[in-house]
Image (tube, rainbow, N blue to C red; front, side, top):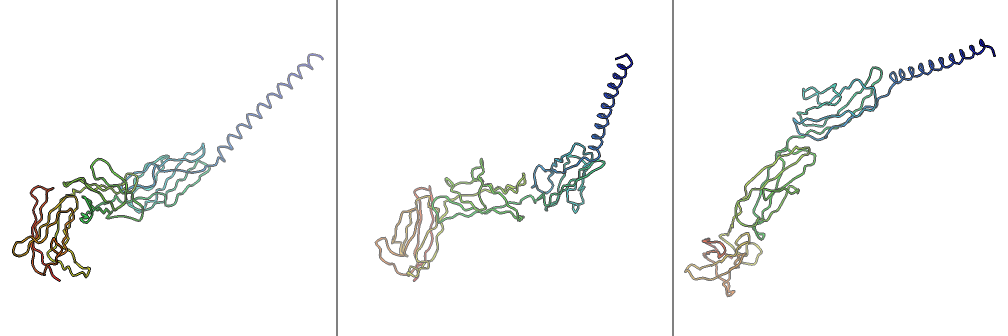
Length: 300
């Protein structure tokens, strides 16, 4: 082969390589442009919590799928609150100032495509709970047992968690009703907490005075009709008491030592006493200098 033929072959080889390289470059440019022009977007998002109180703020995070998102448009659904209810930030923070249920949407887009994600009734905004509680001494139950009843004055239809503290150091989750036994007479600080979620809670405190209380009626009718047949002294049952019953001449007709004092209208020997006025006196070996006295009317 002469020199001109060899040169021609070399020329064709270089020309082939050059043309293929140009084709590859053009193909890459085309694919890049097509990706930019026709890239799809799958909009999505999440909030750091979906339950808050009025006036609290939420952080929203864009979770859209695409490499070419250039614009974000959020709608937080609270137009009625007269606050700024939209944002163009990728990951905005928004405060809700009015209770209610809100729908949130995100539209993610670029210069050629957009996609919208909407979550219905996504955010629940609750009022800050206004908690209260009441309590009563059970009296008829043994020891220093109290019954507590808590409630939320401005409660809504959503659920709450309730916590009680009887020792000022720890809380125990429970219900609106709680029963606690105190170790002795004295003053105790009791706490009740209503929790609506996401830090939306209220705690109320009250001092409970635990006493050795005795309550006695001034009339009873031991006639076996099932109504007020026994003279019963109400107490917490934690301490021992002595009951003395005297007739109008000052003679002792009945004597009892017990934690639960009661009298059925008979003498200590079991003899029925006539109707009339009697007097009682209560003291206690457990409670220093405790004295209580009164009048009893026995009727049939």
